[in-house]
Image (cartoon, rainbow, N blue to C red; front, side, top):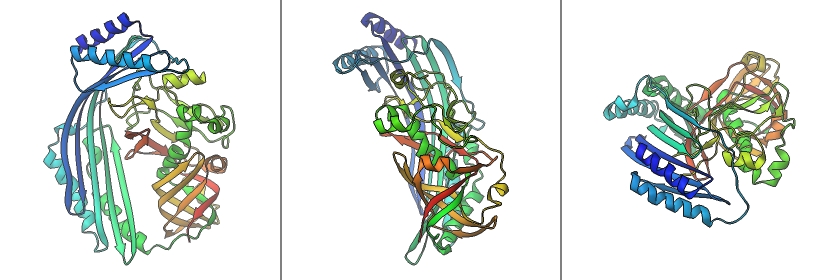
Length: 458
């Protein structure tokens, strides 16, 4: 490694480049999946590679590679340098962060690399079997598991030299139930960076997943209309990530004139008790890190503070373009890709209400639980809850299905009436953007109450 660093820094000095960076990465990945009774995938892989990125006058030269040695680094540097000089257009500059030398190791309580592959397969097979044998109405199942250990080396021409090591696990259980022509499914997802124990002991979760898929078959379709809706932490977290978080990524804003007009710092976006945060420094979450993939120290960023738009997420490039503070949110899924502006752990800060207080004076509303996908288009969103319940006279009543929430995110945030005191994070998901997926992130929220939400149904 030291010789490779020396070659990179010597060439950078000889060529007189304004800014350059070298990123090297080693990873070990295990993937296991079941579909119904079949074991669909059982794989273990290792990869090693890196990239060089050089800032030319008008843009970046970027080369990724798998051959890591001093001689090849010289060749790849020359390719990146040549590419950086071929780009035409406006002058490009970036924010600088100053020198730092650091080594970051996130410990695992139970290192998944020490758990035999056969043990992982056996455990996941048990979860699959619990769901498959729950009821004759269970038609199929899916169990997916992925663990990844990554060691990243980053150096740049301004004196950043950091090494980061971490493990990451993601798992999902899916049960698909069928009765007549009606098909329903339910899923449970989990993940973490603390070790293999996050995937152990999920027998009750597997049972609940199958039970809910069957229960949804007999639940009536919700009656469409406008309701006061209470979102559970899972759905509220996905909502704030998808509907608002992506609008806070500075590359989206900079490239879109309409978004520039909408996302004006200092503009009121909600009630004064609404705070939305992106925080890679939050401990023990899948979206947590100390340095981003541009070697910038991570920091907590308020996107909405006291109901006012307070900030957005930046790379070195977007921070300079927009004249705003760099946030440490440039991330890449692996060494084959350039870092782009991405979220980390995005969440709504807790308020003061208990769940009982949030629903106590709702005469007739909807309690929407879990996230079963959705889509956004600029400020418009559509989200499907996994399950729903009627709220009647302050009490949770019968289950309903096909609860689809639609609306304008800015109007919806203004209509937030209350925020619970029970912040929870979901860690099973991955985020996609710019062809890079799945990037480990976490979403979080307490229960939140929103008035005048359009709910699609029958």
